[in-house]
Length: 198
Figure 1 (cartoon, rainbow, N blue to C red):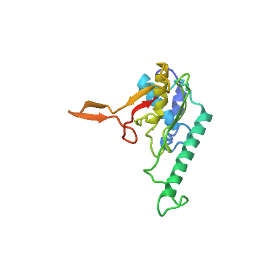
Figure 2: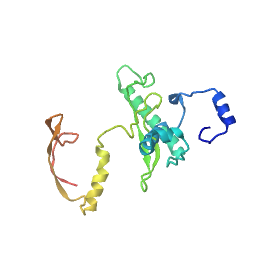
Figure 3: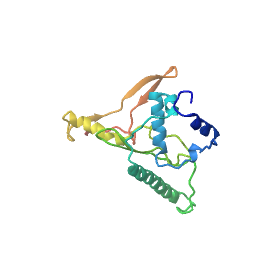
Figure 4: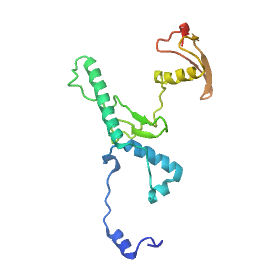
């Protein structure tokens, strides 16, 4: 009212209206991890007061149909892995296995390759239980899924699959917590193969 944005009658009605709260974590939604990710990004860019004041028009690249499919795919995939693992455990059948609360988790992100826009983001199985976004916050080594990028860089430099390379171990030393730490490259089998084709 003091700023002239509303009338005295609107101010009186707002003051008389009961305050109702809806707990955020009980909210049902398709893209809660994405909304949280977006909120944090907007807070960094515009500050918390601008978001709290409201009035911003926010357009995103999220595709709700793809988001729903991503949620379903992640949940189905993790349940399938849990069922397989439960069947392997001694004394338990796949049907009687209970989900371990500290057990498997997962994440899925679908990015438009041409633009880098996020089309779907699922940061975990249940946002109400864990708001940790495994897409944006988890730090994992990429491992073998990174290989296509290595191959693409090699092909850009005119290498072919027939080129010979030397497979050997490399050591790196780096400072950590006031001391020097050594790290060595290794593959899954902890072996070196000498000369190998690309």
